[in-house]
Each structure stands twice: as C-alpha cells, then as structure tokens.
Length: 312
Ligand code: ASP
Image 1 (tube, rainbow, N blue to C red):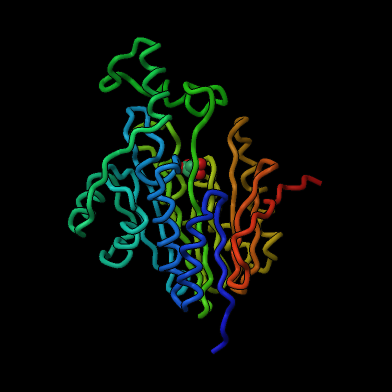
Image 2: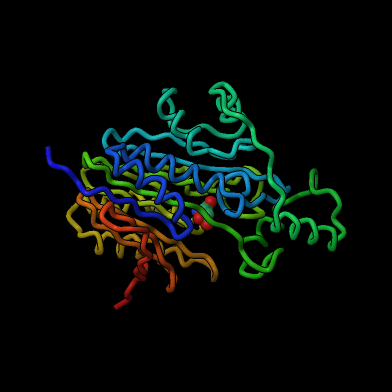
C-alpha cells in the first residue's frame, strides 16, 4: 500500500485550522477528521467574523450558518444551511452524512437534528459588524425590521457601495490528502452579511462551493456564492480534471465559466483545488488573492498566490 505525503490546503483565514489538522494527518489520521477539526478551530475563533457563531448577521441581525463536508473515498457528503444557534455547523454537516439517509438539512430541521445529536446551542457573539448594522438602521430611523419588506435592503447589499459601505462576506475552505491517499473537503460560512433571511450560498451546495473525489481531485470556493451556484464551480473543476485537463487548465476553465456571468463590480470568486497526488493551486476572478498550503514535511503553512484568468 503506497504511503502518501499528507497535505492540507485552505483559504487564507485557515492557518490555525491547518495546524490542528496537520497534527491529525501526521499521526496517520483521516482526511475527513482533519478537515472537520480544521473547520471547528476557525468556527470557534471569536476573532473570525465570516465563520461560526461570531459570523456575520443577516439583514435582521441573526447569524445564519451554512456548511458542507465531503468524503472523496465514498463520495458521501453532508450539508446544513440557514442554521441558527449552533456554531459548529461543520460537525452537524458530518452527522447529517453519517446518521441520516439525507445530504442537506436546512433551518429548523437542522437545528432539531443538532439538538437530537446532543449538540449545545451557543450564544450569538456581539461584534463590530453587528454594531455597525444597528447604527445604520438607527440612523435611517428604521426601528423594527421584522414585518417590513426587506428585498430592497437585500439588493443594496450586493452593490459595491451598500448599507455598510462594502460587501462583507467570507468562508473557510479546507481540502486534505491523508497518508492513505484519501481526500476530504470541508467548507463553513456565515455567508453574505446582511443577506435576506434564508439566503443560502454556495458553501452547503455540494458541486457549487465544495466537491471531492479521490479519483480526480477536490475543489472548494469562497466569494459571491451565487456565482458558484450558477456554474457549479467546484464540481466543474473536478470534472474538467476527470476529462483530462491538468489542474491549471481545469482551474482556468472554471474561471472562464465564472467570467461568462459578468458579475457586478465587487463580486468575485476564489477557488482552491487539490489533486489525488497532492498537487495544489488557487484560482481567483480578481487579482491579489492568496491561499494556504501545508505539507507534512513543512514547519508551518505557507501562502501562495491564486492564479487569475489570462484572457488571450
Ligand atoms: N461563498 C460564501 C457565500 O456566498 C461567502 C464567501 O465566501 O465570502 O455564502
């Protein structure tokens, strides 16, 4: 049985998660355990405001979380979306995969399942973004958002200059290869800040924001989730490798798919990808973005540039 050199790759905000995951991978642990732990570390970080229960609120001020996990060996996957009150949604997604005959649970059902699994609800943590959110609505003389139409607010949110002067969002991606040659991927997020309640992004949509197959590779996304949903970005990249493209070619093809959508200024998509033999790359539709990689023979995670599309 050939031994593989373990590796984990991540979005830029995944440094501490990579370190926790590498301890598991170096001890011969599974890629699936590694990506779950990595996500939990980021979800638990009170300073990380795009993931977990310190995440960004929706337009009503509630933090609604999404997550998915995928096992590249079996193609089993679990996901949750629009979850209130529970911070470690990646573990909830894994329980969906392992305990239910389903793939995706949303909202009240997901929260009920979390309680059934003995998970402890967590308090939404107050933070800077929530304070700014309140100030804006106080300034506008909007005392009570419940019951008023929210669609104009949700539309403004996606504009480059929006209610809070910028689009706030973020997600964490992890993809790991373990010693046994198994791949796994995990994605966790609070989604787009100030989103319409119930809005679901790409992170829990397997094929859009997350996909993993031992035979061809894995990909995961951060950025404006609506874009990745419309062109199935993660699955497409893996499929392009299946039909014979190199990792670089597959990433460029996925960026080309995104380019066709003519996203509004300020809207972008980032991808990280890993092959079954440990080659990795990052791609982005806007210049200047990075990702992390951490091989078992390195001392610490390192940053690498994400590639942008060349239009010639
Ligand atoms: N992709 C996430 C979403 O659309 C947000 C992000 O990655 O910034 O929910």
